[in-house]
Length: 346
Image 1 (cartoon, rainbow, N blue to C red):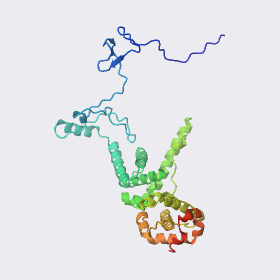
Image 2: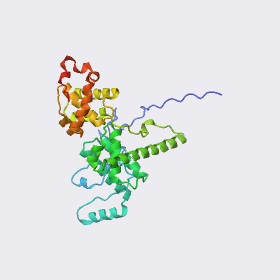
Image 3: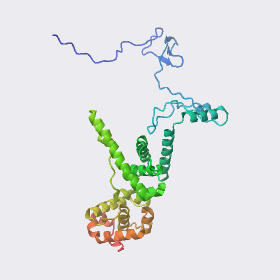
Image 4: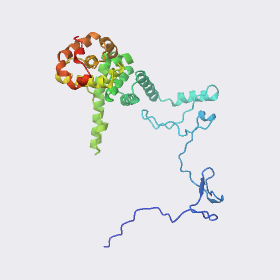
């Protein structure tokens, strides 16, 4: 049986082209008039074709904003991934006075979705909390996504919504590598620290269980599990993760921040501050490095930023001062960059 000849790959045929029969210009000066749907010769004006399909993007909207001028935005808002449904319904805008106000009110009464309203209210609260402490938008979006998972499964019905929001923000901060302490979340949301801790543990178990079910379904259906989409339980906050924020608020240099992080790692490896909280460990390391690198900060200044008492900082610093020869790298103070004799004894 003879083999069929291989098919040639497709390529454009430049032998066929549109040309004005009167002008016969090469290349032809063709103008597409989308307003009338005609293809016209730009030199003599002869109509060469009609019913031209406009392949450009369709930008058209019927908003009240374009009454004063041309509004280039013609496709409406983008779909909100944090809301359920196709979101293709038409919304009547509010206009003060007249029939517009009555139509807007009537639509809200008939087409109002209570679950969507509840989600929007929660998202607004999460956004306000995150904006008040200058947290990045990625953290706010992560907290909203976590809250949506809880709302979709109708979980934690007995828990107050404020506590769930506080727990979602706490987890989102850890996932995005910008951890906040329970004390900071309490100051932000006014939810007691014990309640935040209980809700946080319950949320971690819930998200891990839901993710496990989802991955099992993917495996049973023959799909491939994407590790990047798996929920990863958050680990406890380390002192090094708090250093950058604290040092920036104290106006310390980048070099001091890096050395403070290295000092915290060394102290954790040796066990100098074993049993101390990450906040007090971070504050004590900053206190030591600030004097070592000739940018001294008092314990009271650091306590204002870290949220721990100056006595706690000094007590933790005493352990660092005792092991100073083991903890301080000679590279940090070479060429007069630092002075180990400038360290206070307490």
